[in-house]
Amino acid sequence: MSGHSSYVPKTGFERWLDARLPIVRLMHDSAVSYPVPRNLNYFWTFGGILVFMLVAQIVTGVILAMHYTPHATMAFNSVEHIMRDVNYGWLMRYLHANGASMFFVAVYIHIFRGLYYGSYKAPREVLWILGVVIFLLMMATAFMGYVLPWGQMSFWGATVITNLFSALPVVGETIVTFLWGGYSVDNPTLNRFFSLHFLLPFMIFGVVILHVWALHHVGQNNPTGVEVKNVAKDTVPFTPYATVKDLFAMVCFIALFSWFVFYTPNFLGHADNYIPANPAATPAHIVPEWYFLPFYAILRAIPDKLGGVLAMFAAIAVLAFLPWLDTSKVKSMSYRPVARILFWVFAVVCVILGWLGAMPAEGGYVIASQIFTLLYFGYFVALFVLGIFEKPLPLPSSIADSVLGTMKGGSGARLATATASEPQAKG
Picture 1 (tube, one colour):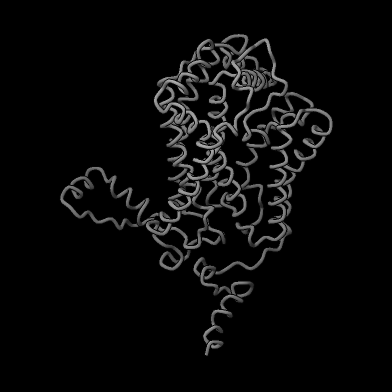
Picture 2 (cartoon, rainbow, N blue to C red):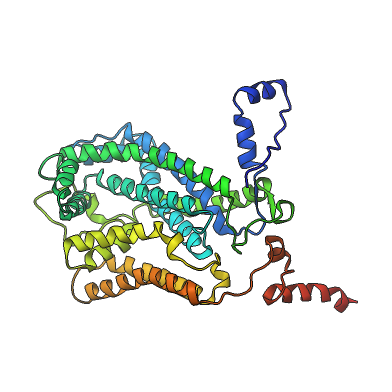
């Protein structure tokens, strides 16, 4: 999609700067004249929303770090100090804590949009893999951030999750000792997590730059999955067409975000985390944040500790291999009837796994977790087999045809027929 720049410097200063540092040209080519498919829907606005949320998390996180004390005896009280004594500290804390949840809401919608419309297929394999890397870094950052308030759920969540690495042969105990900074979760652990929680968002920002670079090089996918063939007909400039849509979606998303921050700021948290960490008292039920629950259910579904750890990481890693696991040549599931049904079954499976992750690891909950774990991994096997045998619906010849309804056959032809006959009916 990258081509000749259309930027023309208008002033002497712009010409001088452009000859030495073409940053204005870069911004113009990336955010103004950059061609995007004309049929993008609102699911494509979540990329911009995620960039906004990342910046918001970094800004609020830096402000909170100025007042937070990463010490086992003072961390909990320093959070209370931020809430009660720092000007607008309550707002920064609630923005940051709820921002993490909203960040994951947006990223899960972004991922499922990519799954539905085949945004992982050639030539976008590297773009997709970079997205999976961002997802992994987000999960690591969120987990370490959850430990920082040093409440009961923070402490015991850190104890349980870090202990999982001990199941790894040879290097497991070494990793756990490094994370703990000793032989139990204590002050050195908190210091390590604080340092990494502060560092990782900037690493995420760096990978996001690579992600956007890869996107601009290969161009955006679209709901039909048909590549751009005629730039003039199939695309529109990013500004104003995409920017207006992105801004509207962002305002709606911020309204939802604000509702959580100002009306139910503790709804997505756990009550036990408002109790100071106590190594001598174990909570009745240890659960992670909601966005980890599907993977937590997969972890607990496997009776063997090492098997559970491998299954949990495999549930994320398998996403990186999707470009090769999905053997169909058709990208969008809008034109794959059977795959579309499988996708919605997979989405329901993920939601149920999330619910099971919040339930006690006993009785029927464990059996259900095992069944739905098999269904989770079965989806990727089914995609591999289905791509060989499934007969897709006819694709439009171009993006413009899908928008104007001029494709031959199918709903596009019916729309074109209806449009053509409408003046006659009026006459």
